[in-house]
Length: 420
Image 1: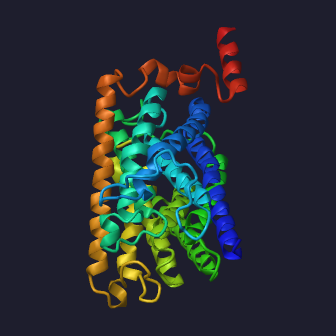
Image 2: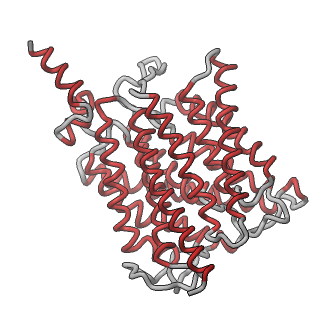
Image 3: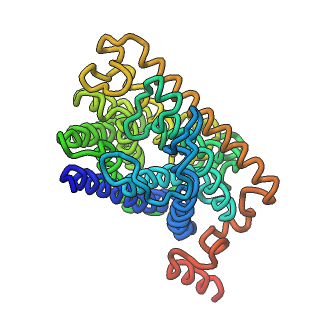
């Protein structure tokens, strides 16, 4: 068997493992960013939704994205994928797992908008439909040879396909679920509902940072020319720039260097560089990450002023930064690196690529939002509401949805104290 086939297959498998391990980062990030009474629920639903989305992706998602007999909207073969070789130059089953991991990350981002107030049954049905008819359609348009691919849309590893798609679904959820109890006052002012563990949140970000090398560098799907190293370099530089920028802007505006903002800035830098990591020079990666770090700070303030309760900042970290990252290739893509589309505005390419990027962001974001919104409206009517009762929300989803506490010693001790 050809050595390059084996090496590339192994590299893509490593990438798949790293991306799947990012779910551990999301568990710590989301659980740490929310309250203790919901920590077990958040951890459990992350594993549950990945397992469920894996089955849906096997049944229909992969086929809709990469199936043969495709139209510009979806693919139409390889349903219930059997491991068939697809002439990729490396093992196709490994490629399936790699793409499955991306779909799992998208649904994790989407369900972040449900945090601390949605019924578990809503997670179940929404995951099935999102993994079947939302994510695969956008992915086919851009990665599966669809109409945006034909226009030269640049999105190397998913600022639009994964992050914006997930964020727009989360946006639909936050609107329909409405704010958590106690988040906003009658006069419109907001209250900070502190996450219960900043150490968890920071560790989650670090795990995501490491996993992102599978996300971006793994998307080269080849080790032959060592280009994955350059992609990894750009990824790391953008993350560092995002962290620094967010810390500085929070320090300047708030008078204190806010840790959650700094962590969000790190993730925003990673999200933003995901589209452009293979298309831009290193200096541009720093600029892209730095802008993302500033953007995430002001975006979070923007949404909060409009009484949109986004517990894990999905709209800012994955939405706003995803838009910026996708548009950034329209400015910074170099002629030498633009293997898809063409050079950006700053390299003599004019506004053509920027226009394509804008079109892709607008249409993909609108599709993800509108279809997710419709799904949730229907589920609200059919399933008797999206949200747990007020009593259950105050009690916490750990006990109300699962019958046990994520931190049993803490809560049982409180109950014993109250009963005595």
